[in-house]
Length: 180
Image 1 (cartoon, rainbow, N blue to C red):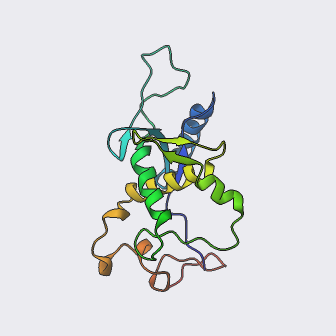
Image 2 (tube, one colour):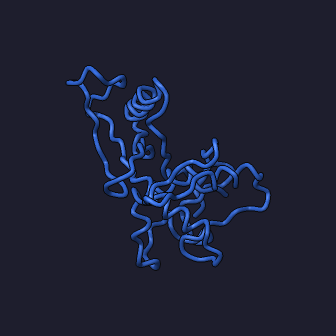
């Protein structure tokens, strides 16, 4: 049995060409009707925790990426989300917002997870060169906010994807069939 992918987050920023590639991929998914399970994200250090935007730079000649206002990009307050992630990974009591780690994870995973520290001004900064694992936790947490999973209070009537695995109607068997 396995869980289907509910949402994939993708960083839309980076080196030259990354944003154009991310926008082109989203447009391809949209043409195929698969865009609802995909979200582009971009970090920022202020504002709402997550905010949907539609970048349009058609009237600006100083921008490298081609943004026409047709692709949603979720602006993330990375400092606030990193605070939530940090609190979750530091929890030592299982329960809500506790992160479970299998014992087979390599040491580099934890090095990357702890590659940033919060400074006195409340901003997160790298203390190590590789922080991809921490960033992936942030993108996943953004997915939690987009799906409003953090706002579930009535767990007796939670969405099917949020119930315990033994109660889920969303699981897929090895042959690709949904588990009843």
